Length: 510
Ligand code: AHR
Image (cartoon, rainbow, N blue to C red):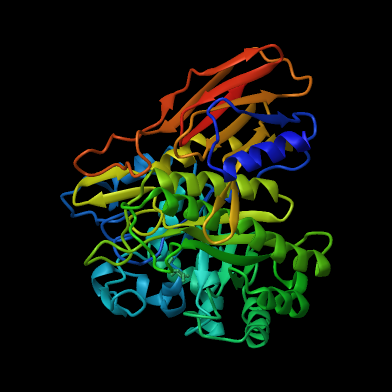
């Protein structure tokens, strides 16, 4: 097997890969140990550009069809994704956000300048009630990012009380005056965001102490148990993780990590829609490098917390391209972005003993969004369809697998696999295997074995389009969509799959 792998590797390097070479994937349905937390499929809504205003919220008086002020088209599309949690209000915005500005009658709410994102006027019409009610409509858990950078301990403590206290407390009374009788359930709170950067430019030693202080006063009210997430590192800042584990340890429930697939090999961000094949492969290499970052942070966490009580929460990730001119980080989304989504999720599935949550940035109209809107128009992005086809992996048992795949050398010293796979088993015994044929040019045969599982039925869906630069636009919104996949056949004890070049498939095996 080693020899075969080497031969394939050399062929790939020499650029002579043939379409006939078979990739083998050995899935072990009986060896799953841990669930893929559905929270790995979390989303992120930030007051940035048109994510909130225009994207999620248009207000009750808008001509755009809405349900209590939320865009009806966006709500319906998001409901189909089974979103487990939604992070809000930032990002960088969170450490300048003062929650009391966003409660009470909307017309009376003070305005502020959104200093992180273009200095645009934020009228606070989307605040705590609008966010938490949205989570209820979507059936997801809120993840509220609290202000450490420019907020006080008192302000933070009172926000938690306002949202979660059902008693006769001052903040619960204020909430009732504002029209909400029962407290919301809010489990996930973030204590600061990127405190090493836009969240206060702090050193880890200083932030560790602040975390201890601020989080102390975030109380559990009336049966609501908080899951406290500390600000973690960006990319490879291992010193941040080391300091936090040393000085905070299990006083936090989760430690975040931010990792963006940002900049092309030229060192510039690059266009979201115009790119060459080499750029595509470079992006895949940068995206897959998240695994090395994750492993390095986990190794430190394991040293201080061998029982894995603290979760690693990758609460910002995704592609980051040049924004469209005249916008705040609004970017389009091609089939290349779909690969970044699928491959990142495949990596997260491998570390479920430590990774408890991830949040792709951002849900609508910003970086690697699920949905784009313009006026009353809406398009679903290729990334949306990856989230749709990966839904069966939520809360399913992560299954180990062995894959033999050719690889490719990428400019900048990276080697990438040409096929990636992940597998899980749901509570009805069905196995789902997601496969990505990363190869831009060659179709690929994949042979899947499943130990002694007896296979009665195989069905699937595929995400594919002629060019990697293909995308859905407001003029042509249905160019890329999920289609039924028929090219998987069970024969001679294995499932044989014929994958077109640059395609993503999820199989359901019963
Ligand atoms: O996602 C955009 C920004 O990236 C977020 O606000 C911030 O946390 C990160 O730097």
